[in-house]
Amino acid sequence: MSAEHVLTMLNEHEVKFVDLRFTDTKGKE
Image (cartoon, rainbow, N blue to C red; front, side, top):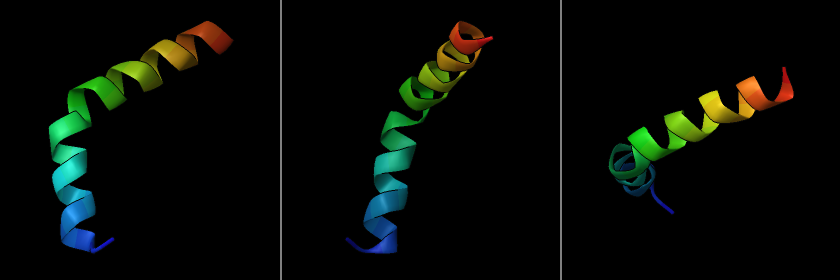
């Protein structure tokens, strides 16, 4: 996978990813 492809995927899923991270953090704490 090229870096450009990874960045594109991150941009497309950024909101979902960040939301999951915040939810996961709150769930653990």
